[in-house]
Amino acid sequence: MLAPQTEGLHAEAVGLDTRDDQDILALLAAGQSAAADSVATAAPAIAAGAVLAAQAVRDGGRLVYAAAGSSGLMALADALELPGTYGIPRERIVVLLAGGSDALVDMKGGPEDDGQAARSAVEALGLGSKDCLIAITASGYTPYPLAALDAASAAGARTIGIANNAGAPILTRAQVGICLPTPPEVIAGSTRMGAGTAQKIALNMLSTLMAIRLGHVHDGYMVNVVADNAKLRGRARGIVQAIAKVDAETAEIALLQTDGAVKPAVLVALGVGSHEEATTMLGQHGGNLRSALDTLLRR
Image 1: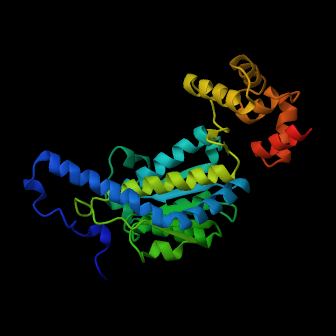
Image 2: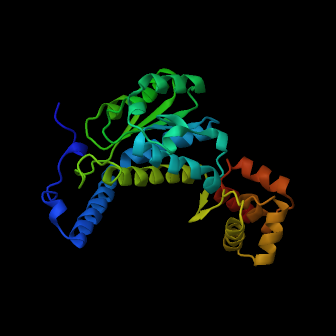
Image 3: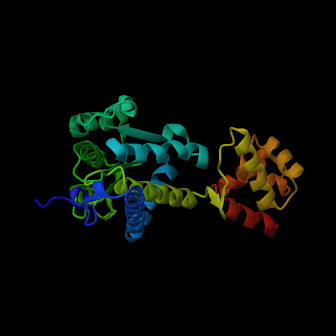
């Protein structure tokens, strides 16, 4: 088997350690930019993955991330922010990280080879057809995410595989394979750099498109945000003001009536009589605020 691209030597890296600081940093920055640019080629696959993820959440299933090492950190960063940003219940988001929580303070290499640990973790979750597992690995060959994906497939769950090497097995064994063809790293094999950057961008794109299709975004506003601090409470007020075109006081009163929930607060600010009535209206429109607004404004 040919060495994967993620292990190759960057064409401009020869003599890297003899260059001055500014030249080295310029090359590192260019490597990050090239990695980011590679994500554009994967847009159709990312869109297909977002469809699977949205279906899982809509069906009441779970979104499960499985990864090791730097890919695990990218998964964790994406997963942990979904409940607060888009109001997806925290129990519906699961991260399987090789080595478990210990890896967050001491990331050893060995656990990424433990496919049995991944299989056991997936089996313990009792995944089924409503769930979706996203397996992430730069090489596409890492045993932990591969085994997790295979176990999820065997359980009937939806599966998405993300890798940075074309033809990697995780791409062909997943229901949707997302290849992020990043060039060789400036530091050969250091996939926390370009590959990790591309993975973070792709995961951001996938989960954001998922949230949009779930109706959690209206124009550019996160209308399903969980406002649990001062900054987010101010943001929620501003969102209600902007969409309902009301003043700050009206928006604040509406949010108080809806326990801080933005979507029903927009409807209340526009004259819907109560939180309960606004929630019922949203339910009739699958939680989609735009659709509910169209109905309200036609009255």
